[in-house]
Length: 89
Image (cartoon, rainbow, N blue to C red; front, side, top):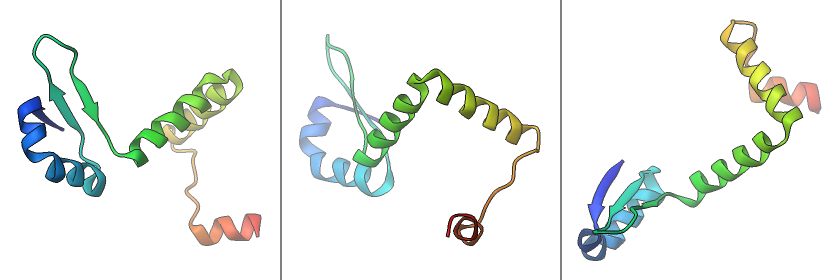
């Protein structure tokens, strides 16, 4: 994560935005006497939106949390793309 001032943002906007989109960097724009602003890539934003959507539903939330707990207990199994295709092909 990189913190920049509004002036730095104006001066270096192309480079900063390129870094955000290419490298999934996060830029915090610090602002005098105002709330800071965070710049993230569209991919990161969409990922957060999907997570928020899935976590809103109690059934989904419980299933996801149980899946994580199961995996943390060593009970999980990671599928390769080929395994997935065999199961769903």
